[in-house]
Image (cartoon, helix red, strand yellow):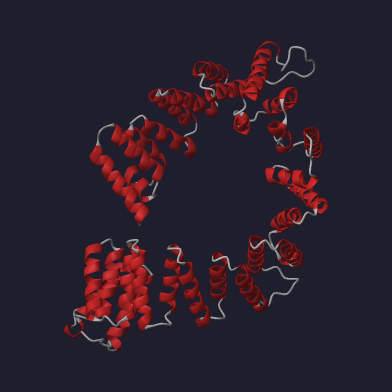
Length: 517
């Protein structure tokens, strides 16, 4: 059928179809399609048939969708709309190469169509066709030279192709068109300057990057990033004294960022272990509440020096009650000597606290509160669990539970130990006990459900999750709707272990639909 121009009435209906598609009012869109196609004169109108197919695709009717779109394309092969719609259909099925071919055919018929060019550029970047992406972004820049996205998109294309010189030239030309007075702070302008600087750093233009960041410092919103870039560039340029001052200021601002200490060590060029440890000691005195300047030396110190520093570190944290203490120290467990020292120190604490409420029987002064012993026992349970000595880990966690039977962390740890032992049913029992202490805690609820699935208790896991799913629908349906992937994948494994391969396969298809959507 040749290209038929719709009369005003039908043309208005067609525009309404497009609007319904954009607003996701698919059923209304189909009604308008029917109104046009029911007229014998326009029953074979290609663009309307294509739009009907696209709308059906959005309603999950793929076979019908392809049928209508192909029919529409056959009826009007010279319509850029039909080719564009066919491309959108291919894109929805992840057939990106075919979609790109369709977009190119559409552009042969309407070379300056902005929407088709944008859609093409998105697929080109998806397929890593960087040369093609650059060409498409250049066309968009020519068509819309006043739009920010046109300039940035074209600059990004050159950046990705590692043509840093051209990318910087484009960004600078665009920056000069932005009328932002030096006294004004504009967030988007600030991000543009930072992006410029990123390209400079990737191009190894360290001196230019430093001068650039200093020139526009007042117009950049992220003051912390400005200082971090300064420190990095000064290190690269070998201006170590200035770099050390920048990193000292950054540490004063955030004494818990490990990267700042690494930068400071490089800037100071510390050659001996004693010098490195002294720096951390000085910072620790300036920031007595900070953990990092006391934790990082533990990575460096050997033997007796490690024992001395670890003793101080553990005492402070046990006294104030620090549940994640073991997590903080876990990275040291690659060193058997350090493991032995930690074990010796903490077991001695436990023995002494039981008898005299001090870390050592030779101490005087104020006694430790009862919670100190609790956190020591909790730490020992984690310690022996990490080492695979599960009976000892259970002894310590049971002692802690006996003294404080209302602390969720203790039951959570006991469940974890049983899980590591391979006793999944017992692990579920104690994780359920943990979640019963705080039924409003979603994290514990999810952990409990996960443990249940590992123990092949699928129905119980679904009931557990139903406490946090929408009323009126089953928990399984709601979890699928929310794309809760950990639950779905654990369900698949549970069904497989139970030999329920049909249910497992059904769940696999549900996950596939989410991933491929």
